[in-house]
Length: 146
Image 1: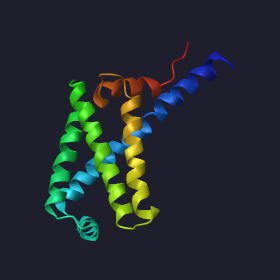
Image 2: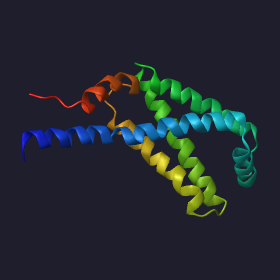
Image 3: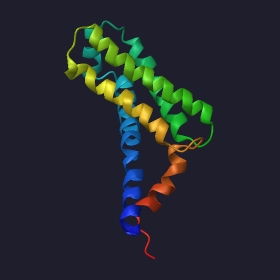
Image 4: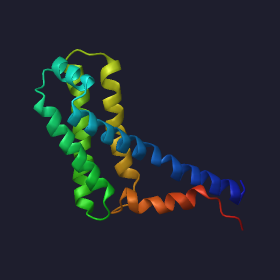
């Protein structure tokens, strides 16, 4: 295998690591907004699961805090707690739907986001943040010519 194809594969792997990171960040941002705005989907889901609506406010605030922790540079321990919190949020949503007797159409996505959260944390540089790793993404996307 040529050096060029090896570097292309390495770039592809590095780029693939951003898939779960992006999924978690987008879902957390959208979910925080939906929880805080209490859109009809959230109200219906919480009614179905038997949760009080103030719980949506608590989740929305927690998701917003997790986003702030993940996106700000530094503070690796805070990031660990943010990722752990998101695993509990998405894992708890999956378990809640299973306990309510819902099928995979309701619990599979929260479970997938919990898995993406694990992957996102595991694949980010140690002690780094998403914003600190973004410049490296730009260098990955641009091939270097010798």
